Image (tube, rainbow over all chains, first blue to last red; front, side, top):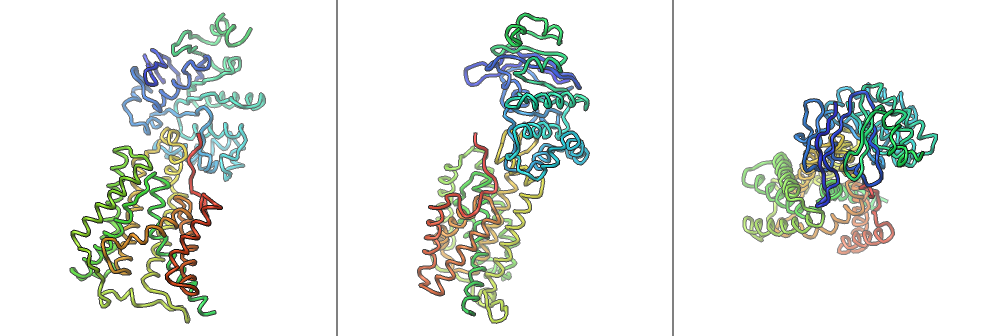
Length: 234
Length: 293
């Protein structure tokens, strides 16, 4: 279980996240919805310890992530597929994947994980020796997901994985995300594409102006007036 | 024809010395964001250590490398710890290390005075003897320097390209946040690079201790040509450093042979300026570029 309790974060004076609490169970997809500027990306970064938090707690099982040095968060089981992909563009596809398995915990099963990722993304194996920066947008997003999986995470934080992809690639990407849960990995999915997200997510939170304003399982969210009006345009 | 080959051979070993001198500076600049002016001080200090150990303690000067390389490595580590602790940016490091350079210069002048110190030729056979390949002769000392340079540059290239440590460093230079998120412990890895860079300064110092008459300011004339190699080679690109050193070494060697020896260094800098006008990135690419945000 990935648990966030009473989390606050600020950029300077401006408080961006206020008392945010959520949980992500293993093997499930949890959606994080909300308008631009609500603080979704900030929340993802705060969980991964890429930005400091001002109060609250983030834990995986018994492990308090705030107590770990930044480079050891991945060993606790949290990997990130960031907004804009942020690949190591000048390194090859395979080097990006190997870097995903950089941590001590992931390194032990490197060969198996690489075979597994290549089996899921044959495209990446075809392009193993190509520089990551020369891939198409869809392939880059696959690589970002593959890199995240290489860390053998228990939880994957995915920030706008369908951003900039064609409808066809978006559909593929959602199928791939759903596939991730078969590995027992819990996914926190930040998405603009709310309709599709609620097809694969069992539970969701709505973040507005830094606060969780609503939460519930798929049916409750799909039935809610707020979601239907603001996000599904029904 | 013979003269041509001889000039070529001289150029190659000169290039060896230049790459050995430049590789550490190039690594520090390209991977650690430290423009380490004190690299020249580390080199000179190592040269004096070689002088002391050879004259006072009677060591073979080449053997002193077992002391100078670790001294250089420790100095490199110390500087890197200082730079990370106080979070000094790249231009800051230029100022700080230039200050260090002046402090080292003053300290060495106090310890060894401004007199010329030269290893007597009877304990420094490497300087006078030559390696013969058919009719061609090249300095034994510069041949050693070239062997060390190839070892250092190819070794660093392999480290960066084919090891987990190297991948971590390259990833961090491109995307620091993501590299950390996947477990790269940069403060630790940066010490590996700083140590290697420092060790090459130690080795360079031992070579120069056998090559030059030492004074506290003797490295100053090397600054321009070494920076030329660093800039032409593409930062942190060990193979590029060797390539750039080859170009500069050849220009010097040929100018010395076929034009005016006094013009040799100058010509090397003219080449630098001409190349930088047309290729501001240098003759070779940087090994890793930072991500453009």
